[in-house]
Length: 261
Length: 305
Image 1 (tube, helix red, strand yellow):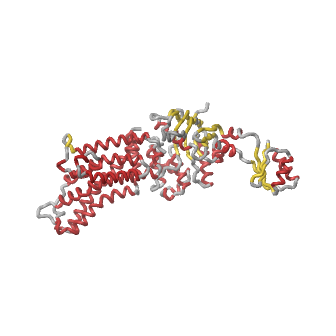
Image 2 (cartoon, one colour; image 1 turned 45 degrees about the vertical axis):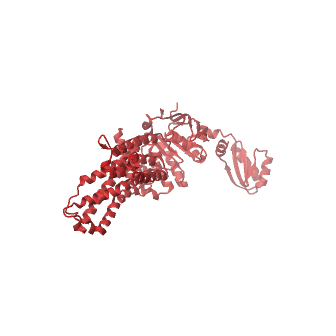
Image 3 (cartoon, helix red, strand yellow; image 1 turned 120 degrees about the vertical axis):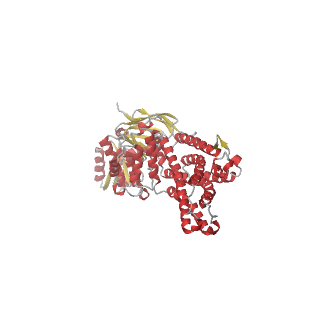
Protein backbone atom coordinates (compact mmCIF):
# COMPACT_ATOMS: atom_id res chain seq x y z
CA UNK A 1 0.00 0.00 0.00
CA UNK A 2 1.33 3.40 -0.85
CA UNK A 3 2.52 5.98 1.62
CA UNK A 4 -0.33 8.33 0.68
CA UNK A 5 -2.96 5.74 1.65
CA UNK A 6 -1.33 5.19 5.03
CA UNK A 7 -0.99 8.93 5.58
CA UNK A 8 -4.64 9.70 4.78
CA UNK A 9 -5.81 6.86 7.02
CA UNK A 10 -3.68 8.33 9.80
CA UNK A 11 -5.14 11.83 9.23
CA UNK A 12 -8.68 10.47 9.27
CA UNK A 13 -8.02 8.68 12.55
CA UNK A 14 -6.45 11.73 14.18
CA UNK A 15 -9.63 13.67 13.39
CA UNK A 16 -11.78 10.95 15.02
CA UNK A 17 -9.55 11.05 18.09
CA UNK A 18 -10.01 14.83 18.44
CA UNK A 19 -13.79 14.48 18.80
CA UNK A 20 -15.07 15.89 22.10
CA UNK A 21 -11.59 16.63 23.44
CA UNK A 22 -10.42 19.75 25.25
CA UNK A 23 -7.79 20.25 22.53
CA UNK A 24 -10.63 20.75 20.07
CA UNK A 25 -12.37 23.34 22.27
CA UNK A 26 -9.09 25.08 23.02
CA UNK A 27 -8.78 26.06 19.35
CA UNK A 28 -12.14 27.84 19.54
CA UNK A 29 -11.62 29.41 22.96
CA UNK A 30 -8.18 30.72 22.01
CA UNK A 31 -9.50 32.12 18.76
CA UNK A 32 -12.30 34.18 20.31
CA UNK A 33 -10.51 35.28 23.49
CA UNK A 34 -8.79 38.41 22.15
CA UNK A 35 -11.60 39.50 19.78
CA UNK A 36 -13.95 39.47 22.79
CA UNK A 37 -11.50 41.53 24.89
CA UNK A 38 -11.08 44.06 22.06
CA UNK A 39 -14.81 44.17 21.51
CA UNK A 40 -15.36 45.05 25.18
CA UNK A 41 -12.56 47.63 25.09
CA UNK A 42 -14.16 49.30 22.02
CA UNK A 43 -17.56 49.31 23.73
CA UNK A 44 -16.18 51.18 26.76
CA UNK A 45 -13.85 53.46 24.88
CA UNK A 46 -15.89 53.98 21.74
CA UNK A 47 -16.04 57.78 22.13
CA UNK A 48 -12.27 58.14 21.95
CA UNK A 49 -12.01 55.60 19.15
CA UNK A 50 -14.27 57.25 16.58
CA UNK A 51 -12.04 57.70 13.51
CA UNK A 52 -11.49 60.98 11.70
CA UNK A 53 -13.73 61.51 8.68
CA UNK A 54 -12.73 59.36 5.74
CA UNK A 55 -10.37 57.13 7.71
CA UNK A 56 -10.89 53.33 7.47
CA UNK A 57 -11.38 52.13 11.08
CA UNK A 58 -10.56 48.53 10.16
CA UNK A 59 -6.84 49.26 9.77
CA UNK A 60 -6.32 50.36 13.36
CA UNK A 61 -8.76 47.79 14.76
CA UNK A 62 -7.21 44.80 13.02
CA UNK A 63 -3.52 45.71 13.11
CA UNK A 64 -3.36 46.76 16.79
CA UNK A 65 -5.29 43.69 17.76
CA UNK A 66 -3.19 41.24 15.75
CA UNK A 67 0.14 42.84 16.61
CA UNK A 68 -0.53 43.13 20.32
CA UNK A 69 -1.92 39.69 20.99
CA UNK A 70 -0.86 37.07 18.47
CA UNK A 71 2.94 37.19 18.80
CA UNK A 72 2.87 36.73 22.58
CA UNK A 73 0.00 34.33 22.74
CA UNK A 74 0.73 31.98 19.83
CA UNK A 75 3.88 30.31 21.30
CA UNK A 76 2.02 29.46 24.52
CA UNK A 77 -0.97 28.26 22.55
CA UNK A 78 1.27 25.97 20.48
CA UNK A 79 2.92 24.54 23.59
CA UNK A 80 -0.47 23.83 25.12
CA UNK A 81 -2.33 22.47 22.12
CA UNK A 82 0.55 20.20 21.05
CA UNK A 83 0.80 18.69 24.55
CA UNK A 84 -2.97 18.22 24.69
CA UNK A 85 -3.20 16.49 21.31
CA UNK A 86 -0.36 14.12 22.20
CA UNK A 87 -1.86 13.47 25.63
CA UNK A 88 -4.89 11.88 23.92
CA UNK A 89 -2.48 9.18 22.70
CA UNK A 90 -0.43 8.84 25.88
CA UNK A 91 -3.51 8.69 28.11
CA UNK A 92 -4.93 5.80 26.11
CA UNK A 93 -1.56 3.97 26.08
CA UNK A 94 -1.99 4.22 22.33
CA UNK A 95 1.60 4.28 21.13
CA UNK A 96 2.34 0.63 21.85
CA UNK A 97 -0.80 -0.31 19.97
CA UNK A 98 -0.09 1.97 17.01
CA UNK A 99 3.50 0.79 16.65
CA UNK A 100 2.38 -2.86 16.67
CA UNK A 101 0.01 -2.24 13.74
CA UNK A 102 1.03 -2.92 10.14
CA UNK A 103 1.43 0.80 9.50
CA UNK A 104 4.67 2.72 8.84
CA UNK A 105 5.74 4.68 11.91
CA UNK A 106 6.30 7.70 9.65
CA UNK A 107 2.59 7.87 8.75
CA UNK A 108 1.75 7.97 12.45
CA UNK A 109 4.35 10.63 13.34
CA UNK A 110 3.73 12.90 10.38
CA UNK A 111 -0.02 12.27 10.39
CA UNK A 112 -0.20 13.53 13.96
CA UNK A 113 2.16 16.43 13.24
CA UNK A 114 -0.09 17.43 10.33
CA UNK A 115 -3.12 17.44 12.61
CA UNK A 116 -1.30 19.66 15.13
CA UNK A 117 -0.46 22.10 12.31
CA UNK A 118 -4.01 21.90 11.00
CA UNK A 119 -5.38 22.68 14.48
CA UNK A 120 -3.15 25.77 14.62
CA UNK A 121 -4.17 26.93 11.12
CA UNK A 122 -7.83 26.40 12.00
CA UNK A 123 -7.31 28.52 15.12
CA UNK A 124 -5.88 31.31 12.96
CA UNK A 125 -8.95 31.07 10.68
CA UNK A 126 -11.41 31.12 13.59
CA UNK A 127 -9.47 34.05 15.03
CA UNK A 128 -9.68 36.02 11.79
CA UNK A 129 -13.39 35.34 11.42
CA UNK A 130 -13.96 36.30 15.07
CA UNK A 131 -12.20 39.68 14.65
CA UNK A 132 -14.17 40.46 11.50
CA UNK A 133 -17.46 39.55 13.17
CA UNK A 134 -16.65 41.60 16.29
CA UNK A 135 -15.86 44.57 14.02
CA UNK A 136 -19.14 44.23 12.13
CA UNK A 137 -20.99 43.87 15.42
CA UNK A 138 -19.35 47.06 16.74
CA UNK A 139 -20.48 48.75 13.52
CA UNK A 140 -24.06 47.84 14.33
CA UNK A 141 -23.84 48.86 18.00
CA UNK A 142 -22.00 52.17 17.38
CA UNK A 143 -22.43 53.21 13.73
CA UNK A 144 -20.20 56.25 14.32
CA UNK A 145 -17.19 53.88 14.62
CA UNK A 146 -17.61 53.48 10.87
CA UNK A 147 -17.03 49.73 10.57
CA UNK A 148 -20.00 49.34 8.24
CA UNK A 149 -18.91 52.16 5.94
CA UNK A 150 -15.54 50.70 4.98
CA UNK A 151 -14.17 47.42 3.67
CA UNK A 152 -11.39 45.68 5.64
CA UNK A 153 -8.15 45.30 3.68
CA UNK A 154 -7.92 41.56 4.02
CA UNK A 155 -4.63 41.12 2.18
CA UNK A 156 -2.71 43.34 4.61
CA UNK A 157 -3.99 41.61 7.78
CA UNK A 158 -3.75 38.09 6.42
CA UNK A 159 -0.13 38.80 5.50
CA UNK A 160 0.69 39.60 9.14
CA UNK A 161 -1.06 36.45 10.32
CA UNK A 162 0.70 34.36 7.69
CA UNK A 163 4.10 35.71 8.76
CA UNK A 164 3.27 34.98 12.39
CA UNK A 165 2.23 31.42 11.52
CA UNK A 166 5.39 30.66 9.55
CA UNK A 167 7.49 32.14 12.37
CA UNK A 168 5.82 29.65 14.74
CA UNK A 169 6.65 26.55 12.70
CA UNK A 170 10.03 26.19 14.39
CA UNK A 171 8.60 25.68 17.84
CA UNK A 172 5.88 23.38 16.48
CA UNK A 173 8.65 20.99 15.41
CA UNK A 174 10.35 21.13 18.82
CA UNK A 175 7.20 20.92 20.92
CA UNK A 176 5.72 18.10 18.86
CA UNK A 177 8.80 15.96 19.26
CA UNK A 178 8.94 16.63 23.03
CA UNK A 179 5.25 15.86 23.47
CA UNK A 180 5.55 12.62 21.50
CA UNK A 181 8.74 11.59 23.28
CA UNK A 182 7.66 12.19 26.89
CA UNK A 183 4.53 10.58 28.31
CA UNK A 184 4.58 12.99 31.22
CA UNK A 185 3.00 16.16 29.84
CA UNK A 186 4.71 18.33 32.47
CA UNK A 187 7.98 17.98 30.54
CA UNK A 188 6.91 19.45 27.16
CA UNK A 189 4.49 21.86 28.83
CA UNK A 190 6.91 23.17 31.47
CA UNK A 191 9.83 23.34 29.08
CA UNK A 192 7.75 25.02 26.38
CA UNK A 193 6.07 27.59 28.64
CA UNK A 194 9.39 28.51 30.23
CA UNK A 195 11.07 29.02 26.86
CA UNK A 196 8.05 30.88 25.47
CA UNK A 197 8.34 33.43 28.29
CA UNK A 198 12.11 33.62 27.86
CA UNK A 199 11.44 34.11 24.16
CA UNK A 200 9.28 37.18 24.82
CA UNK A 201 11.87 38.67 27.19
CA UNK A 202 14.92 38.16 25.03
CA UNK A 203 13.14 39.42 21.92
CA UNK A 204 14.09 42.85 23.34
CA UNK A 205 17.58 42.06 22.03
CA UNK A 206 16.74 41.14 18.42
CA UNK A 207 20.33 40.67 17.26
CA UNK A 208 20.84 37.68 19.53
CA UNK A 209 17.30 36.35 19.78
CA UNK A 210 17.01 36.07 16.01
CA UNK A 211 18.53 32.60 16.48
CA UNK A 212 16.14 31.60 19.27
CA UNK A 213 13.01 29.86 17.90
CA UNK A 214 10.80 30.86 20.84
CA UNK A 215 11.39 34.55 19.97
CA UNK A 216 10.50 34.24 16.27
CA UNK A 217 6.80 34.87 16.79
CA UNK A 218 7.42 38.23 18.52
CA UNK A 219 10.29 39.21 16.22
CA UNK A 220 8.25 38.53 13.09
CA UNK A 221 5.98 41.43 14.10
CA UNK A 222 8.21 43.67 16.25
CA UNK A 223 11.13 44.00 13.84
CA UNK A 224 8.96 45.23 10.98
CA UNK A 225 11.19 46.87 8.34
CA UNK A 226 14.32 46.25 10.40
CA UNK A 227 14.08 42.50 9.79
CA UNK A 228 17.39 41.23 8.37
CA UNK A 229 16.85 39.55 5.02
CA UNK A 230 18.41 36.43 3.54
CA UNK A 231 18.03 36.26 -0.26
CA UNK A 232 15.31 38.87 0.12
CA UNK A 233 13.31 36.74 2.54
CA UNK A 234 12.84 37.55 6.23
CA UNK A 235 15.53 35.70 8.18
CA UNK A 236 13.07 34.74 10.93
CA UNK A 237 10.92 33.01 8.29
CA UNK A 238 13.93 31.09 6.97
CA UNK A 239 15.24 30.13 10.43
CA UNK A 240 11.78 29.04 11.53
CA UNK A 241 11.25 26.79 8.50
CA UNK A 242 14.75 25.33 8.91
CA UNK A 243 14.15 24.67 12.60
CA UNK A 244 10.85 22.99 11.77
CA UNK A 245 12.38 20.72 9.12
CA UNK A 246 15.37 19.73 11.25
CA UNK A 247 13.43 19.04 14.46
CA UNK A 248 10.63 17.16 12.64
CA UNK A 249 13.04 14.87 10.81
CA UNK A 250 15.29 14.41 13.84
CA UNK A 251 12.20 13.84 16.00
CA UNK A 252 10.88 11.17 13.65
CA UNK A 253 14.16 9.23 13.62
CA UNK A 254 14.39 9.51 17.39
CA UNK A 255 10.82 8.21 17.90
CA UNK A 256 11.32 5.44 15.35
CA UNK A 257 14.22 4.01 17.34
CA UNK A 258 12.60 4.47 20.73
CA UNK A 259 11.88 1.52 23.00
CA UNK A 260 8.14 1.55 23.66
CA UNK A 261 7.69 0.47 27.25
CA UNK B 1 7.97 -31.05 10.69
CA UNK B 2 5.82 -28.65 12.58
CA UNK B 3 5.83 -25.12 11.22
CA UNK B 4 6.71 -22.44 13.78
CA UNK B 5 4.70 -19.21 13.85
CA UNK B 6 6.95 -17.52 16.39
CA UNK B 7 10.58 -18.46 16.76
CA UNK B 8 13.22 -16.53 18.67
CA UNK B 9 16.88 -17.46 18.82
CA UNK B 10 19.38 -16.27 21.44
CA UNK B 11 17.15 -13.32 22.18
CA UNK B 12 18.76 -10.90 24.66
CA UNK B 13 17.49 -7.63 25.97
CA UNK B 14 18.15 -5.31 28.88
CA UNK B 15 16.47 -2.10 29.98
CA UNK B 16 19.62 -1.02 31.82
CA UNK B 17 23.27 -1.95 31.42
CA UNK B 18 23.80 -3.92 34.61
CA UNK B 19 20.83 -6.26 34.33
CA UNK B 20 19.81 -8.77 31.69
CA UNK B 21 16.04 -8.69 31.44
CA UNK B 22 15.78 -11.36 28.74
CA UNK B 23 18.51 -13.99 28.43
CA UNK B 24 18.99 -16.27 25.43
CA UNK B 25 15.28 -16.72 25.00
CA UNK B 26 14.35 -19.47 22.55
CA UNK B 27 10.59 -19.33 21.99
CA UNK B 28 9.04 -21.90 19.70
CA UNK B 29 5.33 -21.46 19.01
CA UNK B 30 3.98 -24.10 16.60
CA UNK B 31 1.34 -23.21 14.04
CA UNK B 32 -2.21 -23.87 15.20
CA UNK B 33 -1.26 -24.12 18.86
CA UNK B 34 -2.54 -22.28 21.88
CA UNK B 35 0.72 -21.39 23.53
CA UNK B 36 0.71 -20.41 27.19
CA UNK B 37 3.59 -18.20 28.24
CA UNK B 38 3.77 -18.63 31.96
CA UNK B 39 5.80 -16.86 34.58
CA UNK B 40 5.53 -14.89 37.82
CA UNK B 41 5.05 -11.13 37.74
CA UNK B 42 8.11 -9.32 36.48
CA UNK B 43 9.63 -12.41 34.87
CA UNK B 44 9.85 -10.82 31.43
CA UNK B 45 6.63 -11.95 29.75
CA UNK B 46 5.55 -8.51 28.54
CA UNK B 47 9.11 -7.62 27.62
CA UNK B 48 9.31 -10.76 25.45
CA UNK B 49 6.02 -9.87 23.75
CA UNK B 50 7.26 -6.35 23.05
CA UNK B 51 10.42 -7.80 21.56
CA UNK B 52 8.42 -10.13 19.31
CA UNK B 53 6.35 -7.19 18.06
CA UNK B 54 9.39 -4.99 17.54
CA UNK B 55 8.36 -2.42 20.17
CA UNK B 56 11.70 -2.87 21.94
CA UNK B 57 15.09 -3.02 20.28
CA UNK B 58 16.73 -6.36 21.05
CA UNK B 59 20.39 -6.40 22.10
CA UNK B 60 21.11 -9.56 20.15
CA UNK B 61 19.38 -12.59 18.65
CA UNK B 62 16.64 -12.99 16.09
CA UNK B 63 12.86 -12.98 16.01
CA UNK B 64 11.07 -14.78 13.18
CA UNK B 65 7.31 -14.67 12.64
CA UNK B 66 5.68 -17.00 10.11
CA UNK B 67 9.15 -18.17 9.16
CA UNK B 68 10.18 -14.65 8.15
CA UNK B 69 12.86 -12.71 10.04
CA UNK B 70 11.31 -9.65 11.69
CA UNK B 71 13.10 -6.52 10.51
CA UNK B 72 12.43 -3.10 8.98
CA UNK B 73 11.67 -4.61 5.58
CA UNK B 74 9.36 -7.40 6.71
CA UNK B 75 7.70 -5.42 9.53
CA UNK B 76 4.49 -4.38 7.74
CA UNK B 77 4.04 -7.70 6.03
CA UNK B 78 4.48 -9.65 9.25
CA UNK B 79 2.37 -7.37 11.46
CA UNK B 80 -0.44 -7.64 8.92
CA UNK B 81 -1.00 -11.21 10.07
CA UNK B 82 -0.85 -10.42 13.80
CA UNK B 83 -3.43 -9.11 16.23
CA UNK B 84 -2.13 -8.10 19.64
CA UNK B 85 -3.46 -7.05 22.99
CA UNK B 86 -0.52 -5.81 25.04
CA UNK B 87 -1.15 -5.44 28.76
CA UNK B 88 -3.87 -2.88 29.36
CA UNK B 89 -5.77 -2.33 26.13
CA UNK B 90 -5.06 0.91 24.27
CA UNK B 91 -8.46 2.58 24.15
CA UNK B 92 -9.54 6.17 23.61
CA UNK B 93 -11.69 6.74 26.67
CA UNK B 94 -13.56 9.77 25.31
CA UNK B 95 -14.81 7.77 22.31
CA UNK B 96 -17.27 4.89 22.04
CA UNK B 97 -16.52 1.30 21.08
CA UNK B 98 -17.44 1.82 17.41
CA UNK B 99 -15.04 4.75 17.06
CA UNK B 100 -12.27 2.81 18.77
CA UNK B 101 -12.75 -0.09 16.38
CA UNK B 102 -13.04 2.27 13.41
CA UNK B 103 -9.64 3.76 14.23
CA UNK B 104 -7.93 0.38 14.13
CA UNK B 105 -9.91 -0.61 11.04
CA UNK B 106 -8.81 2.57 9.23
CA UNK B 107 -5.17 1.91 10.06
CA UNK B 108 -5.40 -1.68 8.86
CA UNK B 109 -7.43 -0.77 5.72
CA UNK B 110 -9.86 -3.11 3.93
CA UNK B 111 -11.91 -3.81 7.02
CA UNK B 112 -15.65 -3.48 6.45
CA UNK B 113 -18.08 -1.99 8.94
CA UNK B 114 -19.77 -5.39 9.00
CA UNK B 115 -16.60 -6.83 10.47
CA UNK B 116 -16.76 -4.21 13.25
CA UNK B 117 -20.28 -5.38 14.15
CA UNK B 118 -19.10 -8.98 13.93
CA UNK B 119 -16.25 -8.63 16.42
CA UNK B 120 -18.49 -6.66 18.78
CA UNK B 121 -20.88 -9.57 18.64
CA UNK B 122 -18.05 -12.03 19.26
CA UNK B 123 -16.95 -10.30 22.46
CA UNK B 124 -20.52 -9.64 23.51
CA UNK B 125 -20.39 -5.84 23.49
CA UNK B 126 -23.05 -5.08 20.87
CA UNK B 127 -25.36 -3.55 23.47
CA UNK B 128 -22.63 -1.23 24.79
CA UNK B 129 -21.22 -0.23 21.41
CA UNK B 130 -22.35 3.40 21.64
CA UNK B 131 -21.23 3.90 25.22
CA UNK B 132 -18.08 5.88 25.89
CA UNK B 133 -15.17 3.73 27.06
CA UNK B 134 -14.98 5.92 30.19
CA UNK B 135 -18.15 4.19 31.35
CA UNK B 136 -16.82 0.68 30.64
CA UNK B 137 -15.78 -1.74 33.37
CA UNK B 138 -12.29 -3.22 33.32
CA UNK B 139 -13.64 -6.48 31.91
CA UNK B 140 -15.48 -4.70 29.10
CA UNK B 141 -12.34 -2.80 28.19
CA UNK B 142 -10.40 -6.04 28.09
CA UNK B 143 -13.03 -7.54 25.79
CA UNK B 144 -12.98 -4.52 23.49
CA UNK B 145 -9.19 -4.78 23.37
CA UNK B 146 -9.61 -8.38 22.28
CA UNK B 147 -12.18 -7.32 19.65
CA UNK B 148 -9.65 -4.86 18.23
CA UNK B 149 -7.05 -7.60 17.96
CA UNK B 150 -9.55 -9.84 16.15
CA UNK B 151 -10.54 -7.22 13.54
CA UNK B 152 -8.27 -8.36 10.74
CA UNK B 153 -8.82 -12.11 11.19
CA UNK B 154 -5.14 -12.50 12.09
CA UNK B 155 -3.24 -15.77 11.79
CA UNK B 156 -1.57 -15.11 15.12
CA UNK B 157 -3.15 -13.46 18.13
CA UNK B 158 -0.90 -12.32 20.97
CA UNK B 159 -2.69 -11.72 24.26
CA UNK B 160 -0.84 -10.35 27.26
CA UNK B 161 -2.67 -11.33 30.45
CA UNK B 162 -6.08 -11.33 28.72
CA UNK B 163 -8.03 -12.40 31.80
CA UNK B 164 -6.70 -9.58 33.99
CA UNK B 165 -9.58 -7.82 35.66
CA UNK B 166 -12.21 -10.23 34.36
CA UNK B 167 -14.77 -11.79 36.67
CA UNK B 168 -15.14 -15.60 36.74
CA UNK B 169 -17.85 -15.52 34.08
CA UNK B 170 -15.68 -13.29 31.91
CA UNK B 171 -12.72 -15.63 32.35
CA UNK B 172 -14.78 -18.62 31.22
CA UNK B 173 -16.10 -16.66 28.22
CA UNK B 174 -12.60 -15.60 27.27
CA UNK B 175 -11.41 -19.20 27.52
CA UNK B 176 -14.23 -20.46 25.30
CA UNK B 177 -13.61 -17.68 22.80
CA UNK B 178 -9.90 -18.49 22.57
CA UNK B 179 -10.57 -22.18 22.06
CA UNK B 180 -13.25 -21.45 19.44
CA UNK B 181 -10.97 -19.19 17.43
CA UNK B 182 -8.27 -21.82 17.50
CA UNK B 183 -10.64 -24.59 16.47
CA UNK B 184 -12.70 -22.78 13.83
CA UNK B 185 -10.04 -20.74 12.10
CA UNK B 186 -6.85 -22.52 13.11
CA UNK B 187 -5.63 -19.25 14.63
CA UNK B 188 -2.41 -19.62 16.57
CA UNK B 189 -2.83 -18.02 19.96
CA UNK B 190 -0.04 -16.85 22.23
CA UNK B 191 -1.23 -16.06 25.76
CA UNK B 192 0.85 -14.82 28.63
CA UNK B 193 -0.35 -15.34 32.15
CA UNK B 194 0.90 -15.73 35.69
CA UNK B 195 -1.93 -18.16 36.45
CA UNK B 196 -1.08 -21.78 35.85
CA UNK B 197 -4.69 -22.95 36.10
CA UNK B 198 -5.58 -20.62 33.25
CA UNK B 199 -2.88 -21.98 30.96
CA UNK B 200 -3.62 -25.57 31.92
CA UNK B 201 -7.28 -25.26 30.96
CA UNK B 202 -6.75 -23.49 27.67
CA UNK B 203 -3.38 -24.24 26.18
CA UNK B 204 -1.83 -26.99 24.13
CA UNK B 205 1.74 -25.77 24.62
CA UNK B 206 3.48 -24.07 27.48
CA UNK B 207 6.64 -22.08 28.05
CA UNK B 208 7.70 -21.22 31.57
CA UNK B 209 9.87 -18.16 32.08
CA UNK B 210 11.59 -16.78 35.16
CA UNK B 211 14.02 -13.88 35.44
CA UNK B 212 14.07 -13.62 31.67
CA UNK B 213 15.15 -17.23 31.15
CA UNK B 214 13.09 -20.02 29.63
CA UNK B 215 12.90 -22.84 32.19
CA UNK B 216 10.65 -25.26 30.38
CA UNK B 217 9.01 -25.45 26.98
CA UNK B 218 6.88 -28.28 25.64
CA UNK B 219 3.29 -29.44 25.26
CA UNK B 220 1.01 -29.18 28.27
CA UNK B 221 0.52 -32.96 28.08
CA UNK B 222 4.22 -33.70 28.54
CA UNK B 223 4.41 -31.16 31.36
CA UNK B 224 1.72 -33.17 33.12
CA UNK B 225 3.62 -36.41 32.48
CA UNK B 226 6.88 -35.00 33.73
CA UNK B 227 5.47 -34.22 37.13
CA UNK B 228 6.28 -37.72 38.50
CA UNK B 229 4.11 -40.81 38.84
CA UNK B 230 2.73 -40.33 42.34
CA UNK B 231 -0.73 -38.91 42.78
CA UNK B 232 -1.28 -36.53 45.68
CA UNK B 233 -4.56 -36.94 47.50
CA UNK B 234 -6.15 -34.74 50.14
CA UNK B 235 -8.73 -36.24 52.48
CA UNK B 236 -11.07 -34.48 54.89
CA UNK B 237 -12.04 -36.66 57.86
CA UNK B 238 -13.73 -36.15 61.23
CA UNK B 239 -10.63 -37.14 63.20
CA UNK B 240 -7.46 -36.20 61.31
CA UNK B 241 -4.95 -37.25 64.02
CA UNK B 242 -6.34 -40.73 64.28
CA UNK B 243 -6.40 -40.88 60.49
CA UNK B 244 -2.69 -40.14 60.33
CA UNK B 245 -1.79 -42.91 62.80
CA UNK B 246 -4.01 -45.43 60.98
CA UNK B 247 -2.42 -44.62 57.64
CA UNK B 248 1.08 -44.75 59.13
CA UNK B 249 0.42 -48.42 60.01
CA UNK B 250 -0.18 -48.98 56.30
CA UNK B 251 3.45 -47.94 55.67
CA UNK B 252 2.45 -45.42 53.03
CA UNK B 253 4.81 -42.68 51.93
CA UNK B 254 4.57 -38.99 52.65
CA UNK B 255 1.69 -38.82 55.03
CA UNK B 256 1.12 -35.46 56.63
CA UNK B 257 -1.48 -33.08 57.95
CA UNK B 258 -2.13 -29.70 56.41
CA UNK B 259 -4.87 -27.48 57.86
CA UNK B 260 -6.44 -30.62 59.43
CA UNK B 261 -6.56 -32.32 56.03
CA UNK B 262 -4.78 -35.62 55.42
CA UNK B 263 -2.16 -35.45 52.69
CA UNK B 264 -0.94 -38.68 51.11
CA UNK B 265 0.80 -39.82 47.96
CA UNK B 266 -0.36 -42.93 46.15
CA UNK B 267 1.09 -44.72 43.16
CA UNK B 268 -2.16 -45.17 41.24
CA UNK B 269 -5.84 -44.41 41.54
CA UNK B 270 -6.71 -47.90 42.85
CA UNK B 271 -4.72 -47.18 45.97
CA UNK B 272 -7.14 -44.36 46.79
CA UNK B 273 -9.89 -46.94 47.32
CA UNK B 274 -7.54 -48.93 49.59
CA UNK B 275 -6.91 -45.88 51.71
CA UNK B 276 -10.62 -45.15 52.00
CA UNK B 277 -11.33 -48.78 53.01
CA UNK B 278 -8.71 -48.67 55.76
CA UNK B 279 -10.06 -45.42 57.17
CA UNK B 280 -13.66 -46.66 57.04
CA UNK B 281 -12.87 -49.92 58.87
CA UNK B 282 -11.44 -47.85 61.68
CA UNK B 283 -14.75 -45.98 61.85
CA UNK B 284 -13.35 -42.70 60.60
CA UNK B 285 -15.84 -40.54 58.69
CA UNK B 286 -14.70 -39.25 55.29
CA UNK B 287 -16.20 -36.02 54.01
CA UNK B 288 -14.10 -35.31 50.98
CA UNK B 289 -11.35 -36.84 48.85
CA UNK B 290 -9.55 -34.62 46.31
CA UNK B 291 -6.79 -35.42 43.87
CA UNK B 292 -4.42 -32.48 44.17
CA UNK B 293 -3.20 -30.69 41.12
CA UNK B 294 0.52 -30.94 41.45
CA UNK B 295 1.17 -28.94 38.32
CA UNK B 296 0.82 -25.99 40.64
CA UNK B 297 3.62 -27.33 42.81
CA UNK B 298 5.70 -28.09 39.77
CA UNK B 299 5.22 -24.52 38.61
CA UNK B 300 6.23 -23.22 42.02
CA UNK B 301 9.28 -25.48 42.18
CA UNK B 302 10.30 -24.39 38.70
CA UNK B 303 9.90 -20.73 39.39
CA UNK B 304 11.21 -20.62 42.96
CA UNK B 305 14.93 -21.14 42.54
